Image (cartoon, rainbow, N blue to C red; front, side, top):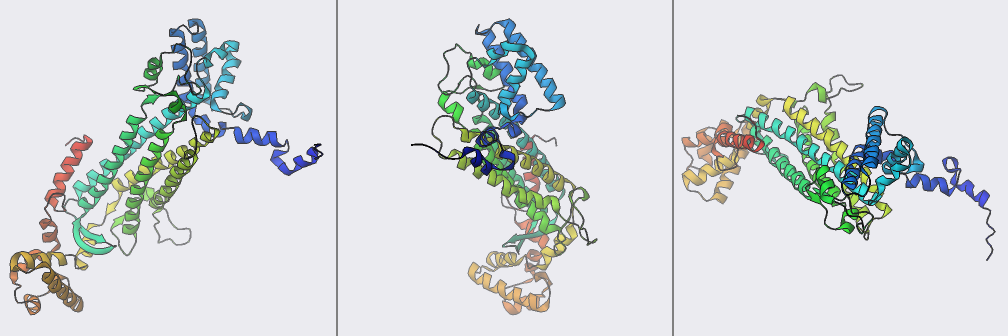
Length: 470
């Protein structure tokens, strides 16, 4: 069959930037150097460890290894000073480094790629980068945890309304509220720590997919690059991105918790609440309304959570249908991880500053706690304990007391004993010992409760968990 298509004119369909036709599209779609250039430090470190091992195993001469290592160090100095050049024809950071090495030392540069593939090379580089991001996440979480504990200790006695359905429920202490986020973030920390252990294996030496016929010392390269051990299966090593997904899933859950904390500060900073004044450094003004103080940093933390979760979904969908071993789809593994890591690092820093430097308006918090009949449960509990009334009946009596307090425009402890006795004759003067917000929080002294004595115990335990000095 004769193909009579006008290929010259058909190239016009590619338009503007793709005037060269399909070859230009292939060059652009294939190139990862615009984003994987950030791996240059890991790539050079991996290459230095690899060539040192090749020399010790007698696979390349020591002279050639020294020449290669010197060239790699020169490239590192250049990139540190000038940045990484982008030549899309070289595709990625690995070929970019090797091409520059060849310019510097000549043909001996070709010995560097002995007994390795870009498959195990990128798996190693990326794992090292994610490992560092994981460590940064743990450090960032520690900063938020330290701020939460410090402020919780400061506000162990500060009373605020506790909410369910964003309705006033029972009084709690601000210290107790802040320690709830401490527990969330400690779980996040444990997830990153668990991920760190699982990614502590070095893929270098797995080659393309089947290993290599050269007599490598993979323990040597693993140790040189800070890994506990080499990976055990070459097929899995080059195709595994669980370490990236572990990081992303931990980042997603951490971002979710940071978003919840940010939402609290956004609500608390609003004029109807007035519970907190955010630091100037993490707020902005309005372009036309001079009275406004916008919680932009908190709102961006809240927004970043959605993007981090999106990054996690992106990589999961990329990986879900890939057979063993390496497929080019996996080139798209890095942008979502790089994006999520940048967002998480920023969010952690922002929330650490927000918790540490915000001014909590404790008189306003107390006023809100006193205004919402937050001690209604305490009245019901008193009726059960002191008057031996079944809880369901006590609940009904308390509802009548709340209704009367609303009608009179007072808090529950603003009702007179005559008011209360008119509702139920079994109520006596002792009830007032239970109706203040101070009595309410003091009574919640069960383990894990909001009582100031318990908050201080939990602060001490939290300091111990973090290794903070007393």
